[in-house]
Length: 63
Image 1 (cartoon, rainbow, N blue to C red):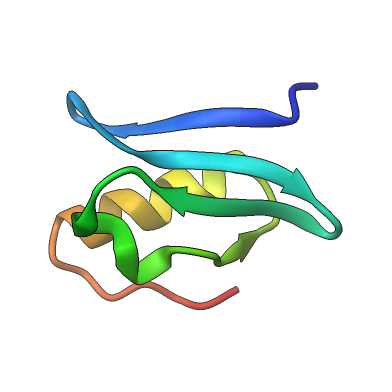
Image 2: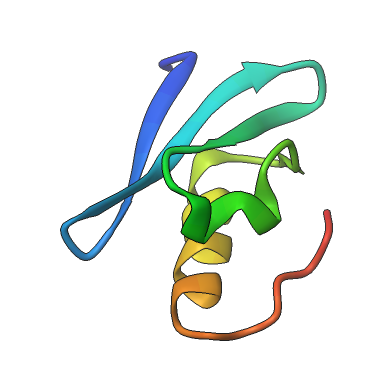
């Protein structure tokens, strides 16, 4: 299992997630995803879903 994943929404880089104690920490690649900067997710897929929700104008849930 990898320690780092790139998260993309469509063809735009949203950010990366890096394994951290208790999950994966998100680091935004563009201002569009700053709202979830620093959030800790249980896994990379959860972070990807949050980025997609944010890109689609939805509210994110803090995990």
